[in-house]
Image (cartoon, rainbow, N blue to C red):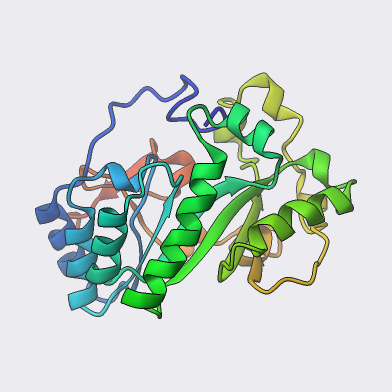
Length: 252
């Protein structure tokens, strides 16, 4: 994806996968943490033991979710994750035309991802009906003044039969602005306009990022969660994951 720091040439850290042993240790270290987001700066299905982590979380009564770009979903992987007990599966797409989406997300085959979502919902219905399947969508500033076009993009995803649509703008934090390709800088929606997503009639539930992440204009994530890197270091935010504030083994 051209606006992701992992793939636009601005990420300098070598990526890695968290070991299952460290994952168990993290859960032991934070026994009261209930909601786990099993993704970071990368595609979670690249992790060779992702379903093992989900199964561990499920056995401990945790609630686990992941966001994927949909390119690596297979029948085997889908059924393994559902059987392991994944609670939320969110496929990342854009509120944009398929052509624009494929241009921004190099290697994405839009129709393949759409087919995958439909199949995933069918497998979910058979294996684990309580799992929520939805779309995490990015929308850009150029769509704010074109409600009918925005409505058509929302309807296209809603018609897939998804349970939810999680909508948010490109991250406008300072740590991201310096990393976006120039063509995306004008698409960042300023805070006063972020609540202008037109309410449409949908079958799925629609969540807006500013409504869920912000209180009185301030991001609440640093006070609600820990961002734990693959090596056990802790950051206060996924948007600034290179800023380390500690380690899971640090004292309280």
